[in-house]
Image (cartoon, rainbow, N blue to C red; front, side, top):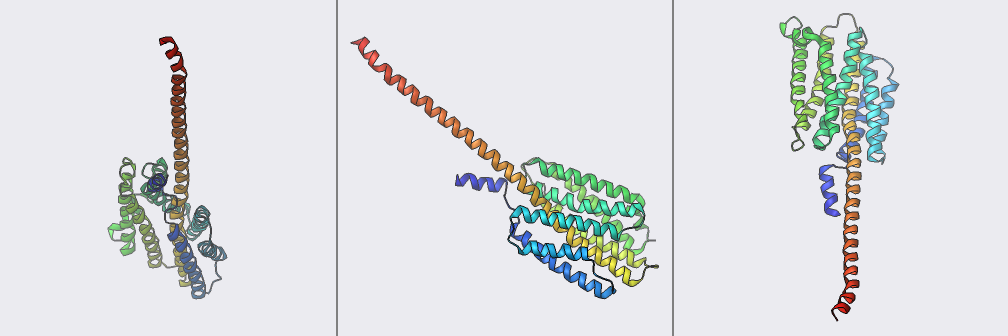
Length: 300
């Protein structure tokens, strides 16, 4: 049984990244609280109590001795929901900007989570399904940007920020193409962990470039409002990236539990077959033993 448990842990780890998740939640909570207080003082605006509550919740979740699944669920719900609301609110304007922000939030959470699940559980279909959903969101986000939004930054009129955003869009398309390796056979991870990390790093760079572009084109907003928008983007990043990792942990915990249940059922079936075989052998021996005196009397 010990060898089978070790094999199961290799095939379907029950709690990948458990220690890192706890530390990350606590660190993100502290950084977020410090960011909110600092941004409030710098902009002379009241703190966003929604973000304060979100980061305080992450700090508590990181410090409290919670079960693995409960901690991952809390980080995913708090980080995903509040991060999305923050990003959409910051990008509020016309419907295209709002839709792009909502799709970006979904992309940041879903696609890296699917790739991480695919890397940790090569034989499971869940990772491929979530990755496929993330790729659909990626295509939707790029389509919403349009050809002008993706390649228009290279014409020089948008300056360095526009070129940076165009380069980021091309880099995202390249990472999305490489993410198709997730649909390889179960004998390979397809480098999915690398592509997931690349997407999370891309998220930080994308939001930083958006802030840079907004600062470069700032003609109507005051510096206080601009700084508030920038700090909100940083807060959204701090919330969405851990949410993506937490979602992968939640999905992985479900896969691990199903795998163990299937292994237990298979073990019980094997034990039942062995018991039936032993019972059949004993019955055959008894029948043979009972027939021996009869045979002896006939021969006598």
